[in-house]
Length: 422
Image 1 (cartoon, rainbow, N blue to C red):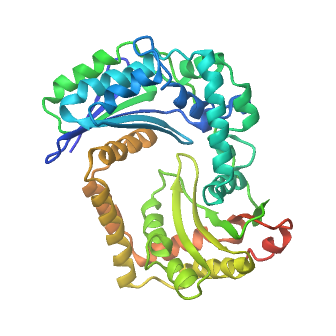
Image 2: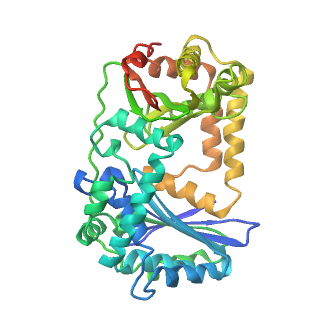
Image 3: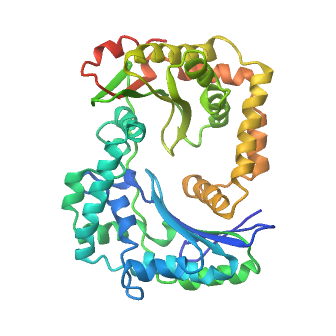
């Protein structure tokens, strides 16, 4: 399905030929995200991502960078997360060299013009405003702030207006030197590929100038919680948005796939427990879902919903009841099978396109330095038993691991903390 090569300078390359597609995706992932930042440069990972599209020596402005890909019907974008940042482009397979040329150019030759930095500041501040005015998105950031507090894991990836406003060109150059280096970078090419050896040589040539110094490491996350906790963000809204969850496991934990199956059963699809209980039977929410997040050093499972301001207490009680049911009674064979087949089916659907294959392979490699095949993942999912789910539920669903974040017209959080009991 894929091949991995590591160049002498430490740059990793993954090639994934796909039959039946005429496109190719190039994805470059760097082990750099907001967990690698310090307080005075919080948001630099995301700001830097923006600046890579502002001009190089060869392509002096945004138009010169984007027009060649637009002219061949290509797609391109970038993203920043807590632990890695990615840059990708997808086009017809015959345009592979164009994609490699542009992506390598922005990563190795960007100018970081102070005037452009000044202009982009305004763009990012408006992006911050947009997120803060979108409770459905902002609540997830507040939940991680509640979990991790004043340390990189708890800071907003996008940064704050104050810090973004103070960012200087030197901050970008220093951060680039610390993390955008060969040993911390991965190039993934997926899709219509012929002659993989030639492709590896092309990548080597395009990225020959990448820095070779040792990458900076991130600080270990400190987790300490002895009782249920809450965070209430006052906002005049017609709907309360909440995240109610618990601390779980990191991406290396052997019970990670037990959590994935459990999460699917709990709230990943329209016939999941939370959807039926919260929306269908009680009409408390339009959207209700659960998700499981696994970082390299922490993890959590969280239920998220938007509910009527007058029904938030009822929604919290119903969610807690569903947490308890997973502890008290084993899931049925029918429900267990449904959860497993959902996970496997979604994976197959997602991996039909070259960009999704690139993201799937790249995220595994950058986080774990190990890539499981579809067959291996399916084996781990299929191995999960009802007994496993109850065992894990008993471990994670404990009062001292409960956390509740709320955005709504509330100022007192004591009323909510009194409800956090399993």
